[in-house]
Each structure stands twice: as C-alpha cells, then as structure tokens.
Length: 262
Image (tube, rainbow, N blue to C red; front, side):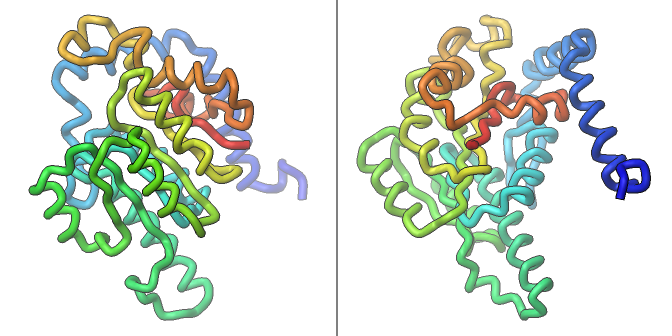
C-alpha cells in the first residue's frame, strides 16, 4: 500500500517532518528555554504527581517516559534517584499496563503478583515516609529499592546482580547531578541497557541554564549531567543521542539526555 493510501503512515510521516522542523526553529526553541528558566524559580517541576506520588518532572518528560516504556517494553527499569517515588510509580504502572495488555492478547487472566517485570530504585537516602508511601502503593509489588550511593562498588554489584536474567533493560539516571557522579553512573549502568533501549540522563539542562540558578548546589555549568554525557559518548559509540525526543517535547530537562543503544 502506498503512503498516500495509508493514512496511518501519512500521519507518522507528517509528525516526523514536524519534529525535524522544530529542531531548526531557533525562535521557538528559545522561547521554550525562556519558559524553563522563568518557571524554575517557582519549582515548577514540583507541581505534579503520578498516581498520587510527587514526581518532580516536567509533564513532557513524563509523557516521554511512558512512550519509551511502551515502545521498548522492558522487563526491568533501573532508576538512580528515588526522592518521593513518583518516577518509580510511573515506571511500575507502565510495566503493569504491559502485563495487562499481554494477558489480554493471550486471552489469559492476569495475576499481578506473578509479573516477571520489575523496577529497581537506588537512592543514597530513602526517607522513611517516602519508603512507606511507595511500599503501600498498589503497584509496589513491581518495585524493589536499594539504599546507598549509586557509585559505591557494593551498590553497583547489587544492581548488576539484580539485573542478571533480565533481557530487556532501560536505565534512568536522576540522582547527584555532578559531572563525576553521572559519568561514574554511566560507566557502571549504561552497559546494562539492552540494544534498542535507552539510558535516560535527566537534568542535562543544567548546562543551559544561568549559573546563578545553582549557587547552592555542587553542580553548575561545565559540571553537570550533560557534560558527563558528552564525555561518555566520546568512547562509547554504541550509544547515540536521540534528538527527536527533545525536539518533539520542546520542553525537557533532558536535552542530549535521551541516549539510545544501537
């Protein structure tokens, strides 16, 4: 069937054309950066929840996460950084949806507790009230957590051991945002990412924001997740930046941060 006679393909082609055009619209991109800068002083990303838990993300990046999980269909999502747990809940709810849809396609009755999919969260400080809320959530059976620094050898070994036996893995890095920390996380965890899946590095936007925004933080321009991504990619050609995602989103805290494994 030709593209002209296939409305689904025609829609996808038009979407791809529009997304590519966005990347060349400097005025539009500039206005988006202005919004991010202006809204950041009000902690805009703190305003949202996923199924009742604060997620501390832009809505656009939340949409990107659900699209990628649906596309990749991972059996394991590994996340560095937990905070209030909203991102873990988002990933777990998407894995639950994958399980449900697969059961429907097979004509089977879904047993949620029998799922082989998991979300593994790592954080240096899992506060008790957040842990309790996560463990009481309806999708908690899909979530496990490790407390400790994500770049300590024993934690790295725990994560690698947990990942054994999983075939389709997606990784999210959203903990300490200094260059050295994120680069160490990339070296430790990016190799776990499956071909065709993603390592998503959040808060690369720090490199593009005014220095004054991070006076009380250990990260800033030239020392942040984006500089770590650039350094990592110099020696890891198996990954490439998927620019189409940030062009599609327009607003994202992860420019150059959606890394696809070839």
